[in-house]
Figure 1 (cartoon, rainbow over the protein chains, first blue to last red):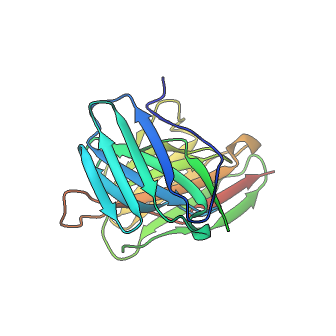
Figure 2 (figure 1 turned 45 degrees about the vertical axis):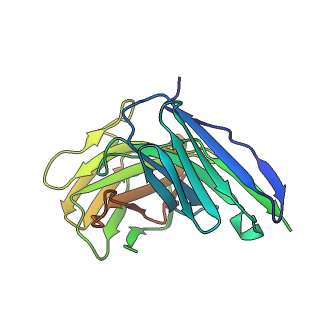
Figure 3 (figure 1 turned 90 degrees about the vertical axis):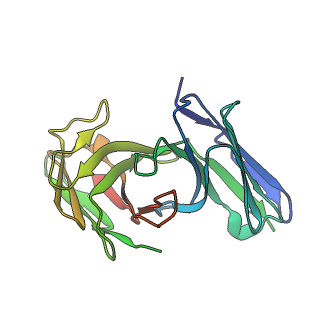
Length: 111
Length: 118
């Protein structure tokens, strides 16, 4: 079993839709949960991070972590064509530890 | 935010040659840097953890003699792919965590280096 699993997509939605991206993981030692966005041929950029369980909102983005189920989600409201990218969930045991990435979900937002 | 640079951004080399990739933290010091490899349409796979002043820690399955890592200073780590072969062609990305004053030390990623081995 992979440490982090994520539906690779591709996911295609119309502009303005709500997008739900999800990951599951197996290692209960993970404490930090991140979502990265990666455009083609670029390095990933951090969208949001959450420590332990709970919700976090930042503009159109909401991250949820359920440690009891080992399940994390990213919601994008009012999706825009500029949101088209690959979204990678990622996790770490400590704030300085190596980051383990999920395989990524390719998202296309159609105008 | 903090900036991490990589050089070169892309490189093409012949099979059997060695290629050096540099990762620099431009406005902060990084005692630790991480090296990832990403194949097309796949996720980032951690190769090794680069530690300033000590040996790098390699992930299982990564050949330490093939992928030489040197953390020369608090702002520079280098990855040398020795005797490169076509199967080493990939996108290599480094990252460095920066203390932010919060509970999470955000990892800043470089723009990546695309290596093509002919």
